[in-house]
Image 1 (cartoon, rainbow, N blue to C red):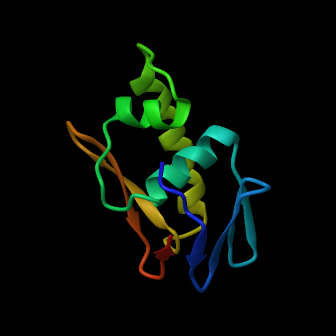
Image 2: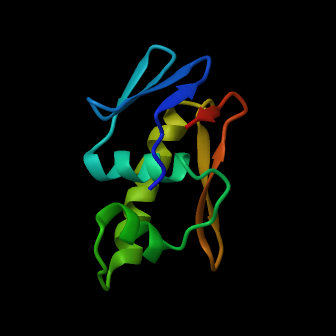
Image 3: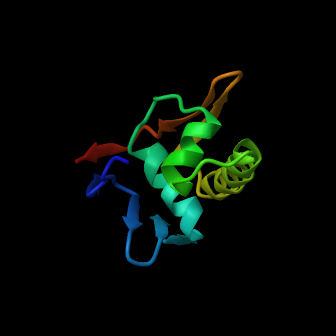
Length: 111
């Protein structure tokens, strides 16, 4: 998936080595799959991905219960992003299509 190398934001940073997000002075640790899911969506802002495609990209396998697995991880990730405020952005559900990441107003990605 997209390689996010450097992020330019006033109040936000990604720490790849420790798998966490830094928002202002708040540290948001993420489990490995949530971190990978965040990076994939963040690296492809505005693009809609069906759950099956997200599962393939992040878990790198095809599985019958992929939609449920993705939904659970999206829910957990949403809560963590909401707790951090709207600085980073938000994950939207596009009914019948999938999920997309909407960047916060301060985000600009440099790849």
